[in-house]
Amino acid sequence: MPGIEVCLLEAMSVPGARGAALVDWTCGFALESVGERAPGGAETAAAEAAELARLVMGAAVFAENAAPVPALPVEDLIVTTRSGYHLVRFVDPGAGHSVLLHLWLDRTSGNLALARLRLEGVAGQLALA
Image (cartoon, rainbow, N blue to C red):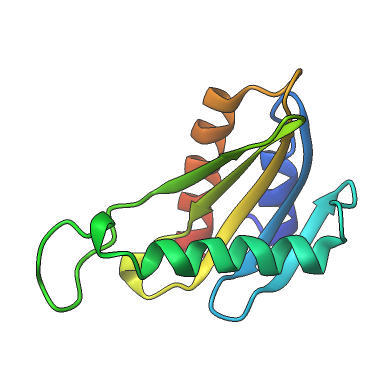
């Protein structure tokens, strides 16, 4: 089973990838990061990705049913900016994991579709670890 850094480097192999991190979304702490320094630094990027994740996790509109503790159907989040894409992928939240993958892509050279597929595979590897 590959380690965290190997998984993040695999995510970075997507064309246009600028940075990747594994983040504990309950506290906003980056467990590991690779690539370029994000605007504001890795700690700020991790905290902001975690805040976005907490907002989505608490939003009833994304719940699959009206159960008291609904299963989260959200697999990933995509935020676009003028210069890039930020892709956030939850790592098996149904199993009680509170981590996410955050991949930052250059907008002109990034491949968002490939990034989504790659992060799905990386998240699966991490969920099994």
